[in-house]
Length: 251
Image (cartoon, rainbow, N blue to C red):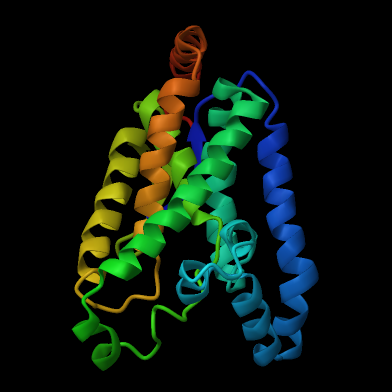
């Protein structure tokens, strides 16, 4: 399922969300895309290992800057495209509700929490399952991407806009567009992270930092609960009901 939009109006311009997307894209285009276009995968690998979150180093008190920098680095064009798509669809509404400063706080803290959960998940993997089944040692594999921080944004959207309709492309077997309430779409997304995250703890390889997503989501839910103005929630819900009543199911 690929989300391509939502039916959920905003009251504030998504200034911070737009800046976050711009920074992520700029880092990729300036520092990573040249390696990809030139076929210099060794250069890209070095960049990712330098600024990505490598558990071995961080847990030994080294390269602590990567707790922050890993959020702005992506492994491929598909990786950044997917992350920025989710941020563009769900971030504007959350920023409209929380305000610019609180939205930025939620984003950054969710990203840091995601890093913490990822490190903890690596520590919890049974030693006996680390090497025999994995082509890469997870202690030395860099984690990169904005998905941990974005997971916090998804949690806030899930809490405050559960009935907003998400426009989703489904390929069964041909692509067609449907509307799914956010509570079902994001709820399924989170359950999928939990299922895959559980498998990862017993050493099943995937190449995805599932627990970073789970940690970011949980932190986002907690922060959103305390950061939000309840009056703003009611205003946005009334606005959403009006928009749905006037636009209906037209896509």
